[in-house]
Image (cartoon, rainbow, N blue to C red; front, side):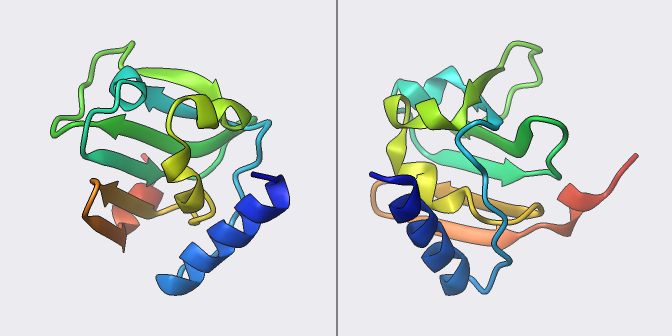
Length: 118
């Protein structure tokens, strides 16, 4: 899929949920858990504000979010198709947005707590 096609898909996803579009480009990184590549469900994602070369996205699979320091590994978004291409359409959602998906379920919502700073 081309970058233009991915952006169009992300814009459509944002439109469906009345969300602001903020692209996460292929050269940016996200934090992703190994369970995503293994195909574990559900897949969860949340977006903080981008910092530096990161997109602000954190994605994990399963029911539990671990606080282990190595739970998330950095991954350039351009390599996401090798891990889980089905989440690409959500990555245009602006900071503060979350998603949870399974094979037959989708939930997307805004969580203002993700924008709070310490």
